[in-house]
Image 1: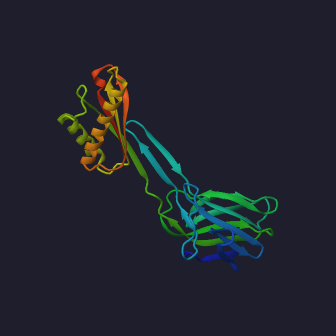
Image 2: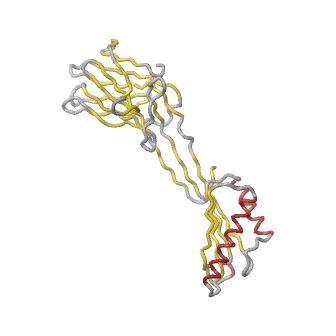
Image 3: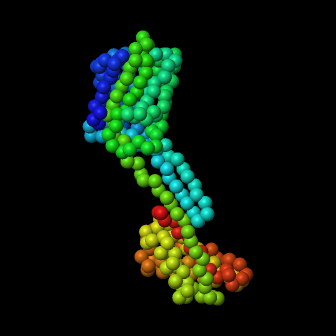
Length: 266
């Protein structure tokens, strides 16, 4: 069914129906009016944000998506589940209204109360491709007749599955020095070869071997962190930088260091 068009069948026969934006209360939703029947429909995204209507006043929906975050050793998966929100009245009491994306994707059902009214939301299943589809709502009228409402809707292409990777390295410094050695620069170039030049975030945190002079330790840890950040920028690495000296590290030579952590899109 073309986007913005509608069809109401009662026992398989066309019946009059009016579909219009809910301009008075919420212009991001549709109102459906027919003799003895009214419904409201709205699409909501993964952040529960209203998706609105097209210029043809077609309802916009979004299919489920998966966001992935992966570090070197762990992975976390978060499901973001857009929904179709609906309410209505004029149905058979204590029955259900079932929702589909045609030709055969079942979204779910919402129960009616003793008065024949319902309210709730059904998830828009993963795998529904972007484009124009038919959203169908089926239920029983109080007299037992079958009502079937079909709407031409637009399913938006959801944000692509995003894989965020995290990696990093630790580079060492000579005593009381903030100068990058040739080896340090080579290690940073190796890091950039993994992440590319457009990461999301770059964190450069400086440390020192404890000297007993806290002010000097703080200053040296900061200049080391800045030196690493400046070198990464000189390589063309973009992103949001956090550059900070952490002051005291520890008593050993291994504490003369900067730790670099980078998140980037895989």
